[in-house]
Length: 116
Length: 116
Picture 1 (cartoon, rainbow over the protein chains, first blue to last red):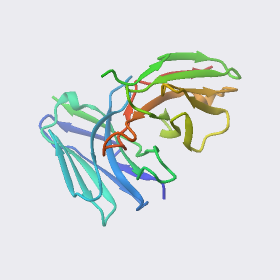
Picture 2: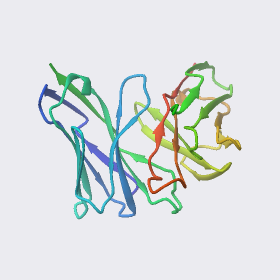
Picture 3: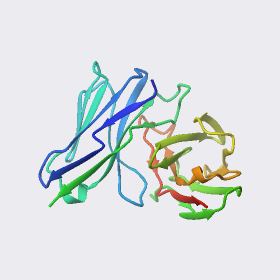
Picture 4: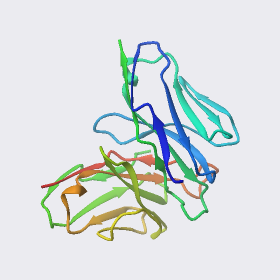
């Protein structure tokens, strides 16, 4: 119940394409869903995050779609660029104040390659 | 503001030794979480500290421990190192208690530990 399942494991798109990465969760106590981007040799960097009370959130070229009933959320990268080539992680956590405070549960990651 | 800093960035140890890793959170952040990242297991939560108290712990053996100081800086210690402890150890800080956005975690660059 603590897992977050992420797919696909890897993704190759052409420049300008819209890669979509999907995540699914089981624990309905999760109420915070961030996406992180990680380049080789670096720590994960927060891209965008969403809570279950909204179905979509956009920040620049990054959009999260959230389906509470299906317990799924996805990341869309509009007009992808070669510089977006990185590993992307979805995550989930329970509301602060619960017994699992400060604990992010991560998906397994998606390696994205954007070809020029 | 300076980001999360971790020292050292790289470390090589041999089996049976112990190691201490250090993390300085973003100024004003009082919550520090630690994660282990490996190719096989992905990103896994180790523990979280807030106001010098461990509030949450992941499923790791007792060889993994940590502490937090009054200035919010944190250290983690791994005793009796095993080959499987080779990983990237990431520290993340969070502005808990400061404003509505308290779940966001900002990661440092990590410490790459190699156990020979």
